[in-house]
Length: 227
Image 1 (cartoon, rainbow, N blue to C red):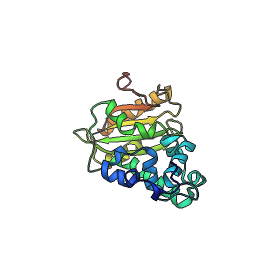
Image 2 (image 1 turned 90 degrees about the vertical axis):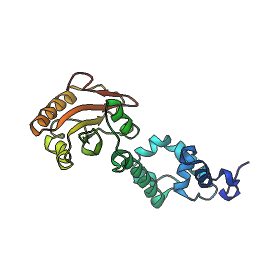
Image 3 (image 1 turned 135 degrees about the vertical axis):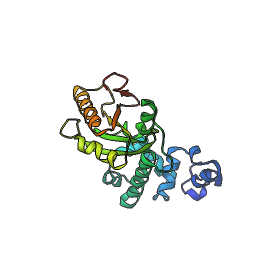
Image 4 (image 1 turned 135 degrees about the horizontal axis):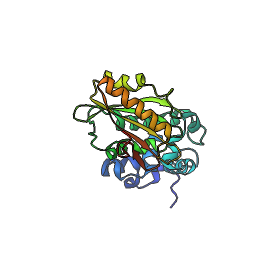
């Protein structure tokens, strides 16, 4: 049956009711988006609208790549709803990266990749970040350093170690993505890594690794013997 209006749906199929009863993990992507959107448009209930939007943009990965202005151009969104969706995506990103109440522990390159993979694998430009660690390898924060092709002028030691010093970090892990999806390190990646590793030795902050994120793949320069 085609339910044009959300209120015509059986209560057990309403997204909010399902969330209350079963928890958020039980909801499909378009049900979660429907809760954010709250209302549909003429001829489309909010569930149908959410499903159409996700198909239009290529799923959650596509949704995350769009700017708020691009989202606002999608029929059924507009400025207010696109801002709410973008804000929700940003909250999710920040909670994974730097939640002070639940700081993950990093003991391997796999741990680092697990924290950032779902966000960084879909970025359309290279983002260089620094993971600051405590003496027990708890993540103190993940700080943005630069956006753009990796080179020595963009990635300056001063910017890389600034937040680590402020957080009284014991060590850092360098982190960046390859939008091509192939995490194979370039010569520039290797040169920047060695330069920053040398800088860390002077400051007394060890550079433990440089993890390059691809499309559901990653490479550790530590495991490659480069650090």
